Image (cartoon, rainbow, N blue to C red; front, side, top):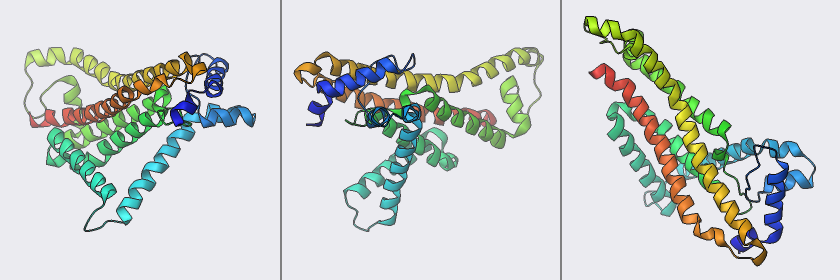
Amino acid sequence: MFFLWQTSPGAAEAAQGAAESGGAESSAPHLFNIVTYLSERLHMPVLEDWINVIYSFAIMLTVVLFFSYIARNLKKEPGRLQNFVEILFTWLKGFVDEMLGREGRKYVALVGSLFIYILTMNLFGLVPVLGHSPSSNLNITLSLALTVFITVQIHGMRELGVVGYLAHFADLPAHNRPTVIQLCLSPLMLVLHIIGELAKPMSLSLRLFGNITGEDTLIAIFVLLLAQWFVPLQTFMYPIAILGGFIQALVFALLTAVYLMQMSVHEEH
């Protein structure tokens, strides 16, 4: 029923109209969503301008309330929801342990929160009526990537110390005397490492933004193709979009753990 309504000519026309009136940033077709609808009905364009912020905080609140409810209702004989959450947390803890070791467990909350939050954002746009993924906006993905970038730098300074942190970027041994070749190459390695470090948040944000935007746009195109005949052609794309959303969230969390690991491995070697 929801998919048929989503494929209705009215919903398709509303989505197409919003895409045409949204400027260059919204020129690509997108699905009908309740915020855009209310923005047009109430003549409040500011709602559509803030759609990513509204959806991001709504998702954040939903995730917090869900896990708070589970935490306050723990039982010795868990039900399905508690079983699901326990399996999820066990998997995330094992995932971080495998990447960072037992000492990296303090980052389970960060990596796990990023995975759950990004996965929820990715899947949010597949829900009829909601119809928009905040992770299809570059500002949202870049803010998450910058959070990871800052955390990694703080982790590196704490783990390696100021001298070890600078030696890491210059590719110099922190505790041994460097060779003449290492000293000669250190300025070049410093520049390369800084460029590589600055490229990490850009690659994180652009990868997530590009993939989710592509999925949402493709689904919207399928909706518009056969909307006048009420054919829910987009349903064939949903399994692929769900898998893609999961993979993108996993890749983001995985790379976060890898970046943290890179700032720790240098000290061990």
